[in-house]
Structures are given as structure tokens and as C-alpha cells.
Image (cartoon, rainbow, N blue to C red; front, side, top):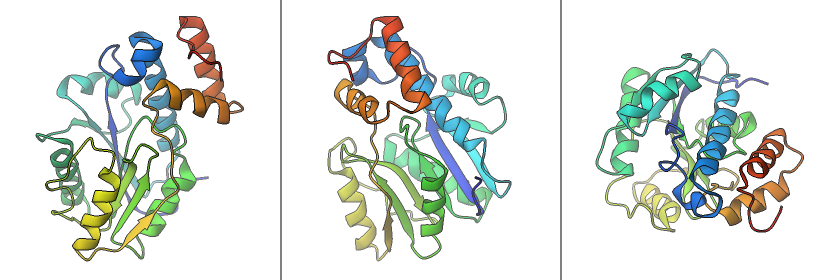
Length: 229
């Protein structure tokens, strides 16, 4: 399968450095194991994006300038990688969308790199939603969202929100509707931030190759969750 659309996909990512990624998850499985799990998640998303059609443009927006070389290597130097800019996540996302729309007039979506269930059907649904909606959101179970997309620039969407709060998804939907924007919703997916969520995801996804690799990794590093999935 390949995506049948034109658009830009912005991937937010960090270099998988122990102690600098998945810090909440690291409390349960250790910093090295958490970084390796994140690297597997990131590689899984990159594998999905490598199968996209020619009409789609993929860019990686790195969390910091020092992450760029590592992410270039991990992506096989096949897509542009540049650093994010802005004082908070709202400003960073706004700048990423502004840059994407300055470079192309096609719809754009932004996704995270630690959502193992993101796949081509989800991405296709996101772009299809933008045919008839201004904004598309993919909610995550923790109250945030794993995907946001828009048909055209929406400069007020990210201003003055309480980032990091459990209600950021609800606040974003409310802000969009306050601005008269139509909002399409995608299926809820897990953002793997804690040992408990990782354990639950592994139990539900044990037949997936990615889940099996993570179980093998955790056993090999003695970073197995306290209750085996």
C-alpha cells in the first residue's frame, strides 16, 4: 500500500540518546532500555514513511540542532532533517507548519515518533479528512494527540494553550471550533510514555514483529516491566 494523496508529513523526533528520551518510561526500565525502545519506535515510523508515494513530502523536524546528524543517519539520509525552533511546543509546531506551507501549498500533517500503531491507513485517513475539514486530530489516551494536520495555515491554533496538561487535546479541539474550523477525528492510539502503557501495548500487540523485538530487547537488558505482558 502507498498513500494516494499529495501533502507534507512532518515527523517530530529526537536522537535516541539514553537519558534524553522517554524519561518517564526510563523510570521503570532504565535509561538505556528506554532509549533503545524509542529507537525501535522511531525506526518503525521511518519504515512506514519510506513506503509513502511520490506525491508526499516527508521532513523530520528534530528537537534540537545536535539531534540532526543522528536523525540523518537513522533516516538513511533520504529526507530533509532540520531543527525545530520556538520557546514551547506550541511555537515549535506553529513554526513547523509555517515552514511546510511556505515550501508547499499542499495539506500538512505533523506526527510524533513514539506511537507504534501509526500506519499507512491512519495517514491516509488523515489526509482524506482534510479534503472536507480544516483540521484533523489523532487523540492519544493520555489526553494529548499523536497527529495534527491542517489544510492551510492556522496561526491561532497553538497560542496560549497549557502544554503538558492532560486536557491539551480537548483544548485544541475547543480552540479550533472557536476559530470556526471544522475538525475531523482519527482513532485513539497510545503514546508510549510509561511502563504501564508499554506493558499494556505489548500485551495487546504481541503478534507484531515490533512488539516481539521490544520484548526480546527488554529481556536482554533486564529492563522487563515488573509484570510480564
